Length: 394
Image: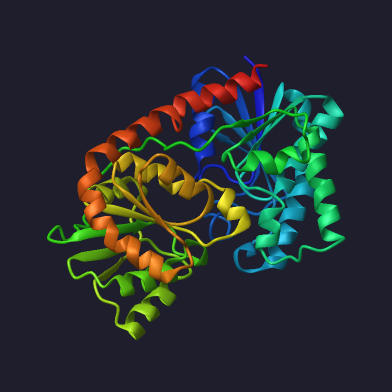
């Protein structure tokens, strides 16, 4: 079996699909090691029990984790974020040159900046190892979404950098079909394979939160930030004026106080704000709901991304109300999983809230079957991992 080095921004004890993927590779007989920084996500503070040393080695079962220093405080500082990217590249490349020759295959798990690929490219150049990148976050769209101007010379430098990374890779995997065209313009002769997220298997628990089953329950779960577009969702909900329904918002995040302020100032009725609940209790909350709300702001980069949350919604088999554009909207409408509104048109959002009540009642059974089929055919964990392994074994 081949030995694999995974270069990634996040790894255990941080949460992420990568942990499940590494476990599966090991169960299939591969030797897997990881090159990453000390755990700090999402609060950008190093986890208890770790020191921000230049370099150290840690064991996680049979996995050797090569950890190195980071710049803390990147969550709320664009300068520190950029410095942390630079640190990952500088220190990561030094370690990569020391350990890279021990492995048959290098896999970049790119959920953040594309710069995470540079230590792997260093190994590719020095030791001529096979290199695969698995892209979950598309550049340059994400860079411009942070507010950087789309002007020369930034566009020129970014385009050259992106082409360098993808040209260095033997294989390219993407988590969203919308990424394929964006990358193909840099490497038109390379095959790009769609390999989406999957749901991580967890032992589910009954949640102490019980929804009001005497009313129709719309439920949103997850992070509450500007990206989730919940301000427009609230304004649409207010205009819909549904006495026989409740909007449940389950989660926490940077925009929670803003939502509370909007609800109080506008006296919006029938909205319940619940805090964050463990991930293994979310399925129980969704099972108590009648329609699930999936919302995102319109953004060129975000529109290409398939929301990971949609898979937990699919597991519930419930109708989805998408206040969303792009890839998420396409999944909902193409598979007839629910209704979608414009993410910016408050009147349209209100109309879709109203229409969701009769739609859900008429389509529950069909949507449950469609959701099950989509999980089996498109978001099947075993099939996706088989696809990635077939690439590694080429």
